[in-house]
Every structure is written in structure tokens, then in C-alpha cells.
Length: 85
Figure 1: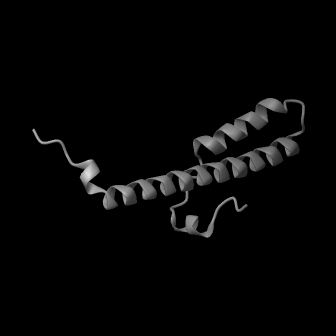
Figure 2: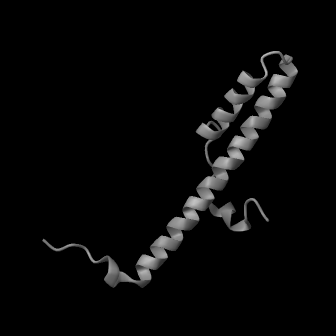
């Protein structure tokens, strides 16, 4: 199973400081208070990378669902008529 398919490359990248990467970084800092600074930097970098990839995956899934929904609406316009007042 591929985590991110090739068609996800057409999406714009998420910002580096997003809620996923920040959440993962703070989780690493709080869970390792006795670790050395080098380990905290390593785990913060790892957490930032994992959070970034998770947000990127979530944005791809949402874009795919939106594309399928708009394609369905385009093919079935009778089901989605605007209410006339």
C-alpha cells in the first residue's frame, strides 16, 4: 500500500508549521523530559516530519473526496437543483 500516490504531487504542499507537526513536536517534548538535548532535537525533527506527512495525507484524502463529490454533482444535476423562491 502506498502512503501517498503519485497523483497527490499535484496538490500544493501544506505549510511547515501546521497543527499536525506542532502537535507531534510538543508530544515528543512532553514525553521525554529526562532525555538529552540531542534526543529531544532528534525526536522533534522526527515528530515534525511525521506530522507533516500525516497532514499531507489528510489533505490528499479530502481533495480526492471533494473531486469525487463534484464529479457526481456534475453528472447528476437534476438531483441538485437550486431551490427557487
